[in-house]
Length: 277
Image (cartoon, rainbow, N blue to C red; front, side):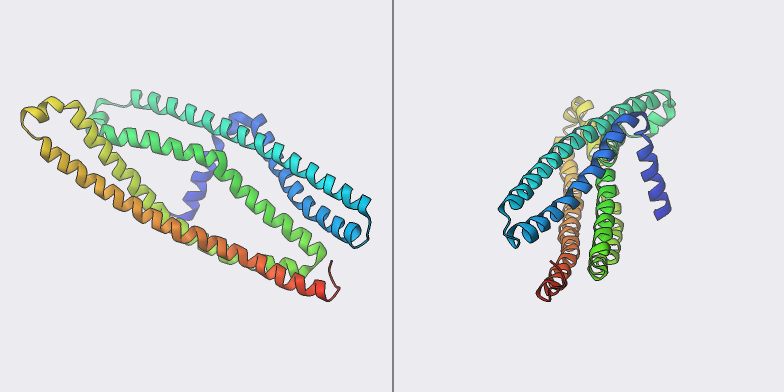
């Protein structure tokens, strides 16, 4: 699927949150405040160390510690309410979609239900709704939050030292490239998992509904073997997906941490040269 289509799908999912404007203001307003607090805490640490410890001012150091504790408390409260609001809105989206799916299935013709397997319908109704719920809840929020945090840190570092800002931004193109590769690897696997789960659900549904027929023709062993084979196929796809995730998740962390290494290396050198505190 083309990337433009992916962005259109992402935007379409985000539009499901439109009826919850008040909650969205709270969610993304708290996100901005959380990022501000995360930027303020290192500045408070710097103030406490430079003016309190090196300046031998215990009163100022105590105030710095108090402000840091207060900022941490505020951040914790904001994170809590952000989680509650995002989960509430995403669950509301899932509730709405389930109702829409049921209504749509009721409007479809008999020929559709004759041709479409019930297991596939159940799989899509469950898996797709759950993924949209996750996407409209934490996924989009974390995506915007991460981008905002990187931008905020870059601005602060540009004010402090432009070289430090360039060092931390040096890893961003590699992160984006690796994330793009990861997305291209994981997307077809996710589709395969969903399709295979639909096959499993269909087989199970047919056997439960036609249990008497299966028993009357002594087909239990055949149906069990068929289900075991389909289950093995699902397991292999799921294992491959887990391997892709296990490879890419730490690799993304390593690339991101290179920025921290560069900051400590160059920033530490600036401190030893009395050019930075």
